[in-house]
Image 1 (cartoon, rainbow, N blue to C red):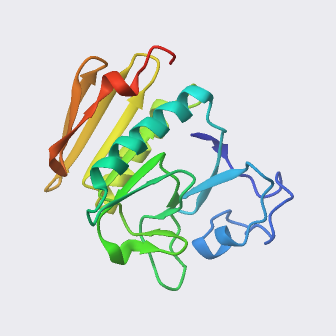
Image 2 (cartoon, helix red, strand yellow):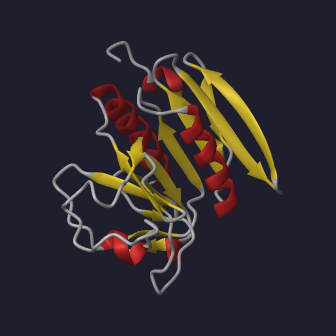
Length: 204
């Protein structure tokens, strides 16, 4: 949930001095000393502040993570809920300039599961919308994830209880929408479906 671009002279808790061009790398990012609850994402070197999730967002994230966790038990793929750093264009020398924190990441390649987070593109990414999200942000993320090699990207809209699923296949994008009373087939796991009835419970 991005809330605005970081301006170097606004936040004083950074451990490194801002650069004149205001572009950053993972090496800069990992050295920032943030207050509790503060989070940022880097997108091609630009830093964006992230807002705190509300209770509905957290409930949906927990339910989805639980369904994936139960299915993946004993399998090579793993689920990681936010906060969790994903270095989409990983470079060993830490010069990569894009670090995102998707609400949920599914990673099947063991080599990508580093101590600090994901080193490369997850197989599946799920983002849960909040009032602070914008169409521009979602479009930016859509293109970003496709460019990085993510196989599947889900957007969850808690307000209208709709899932939008994007599948990236050989340079093309296919997308599908699912309403609250249906199940969502998981493209990367053909034998698994997510129950939206469980995701969108009455108390949400």
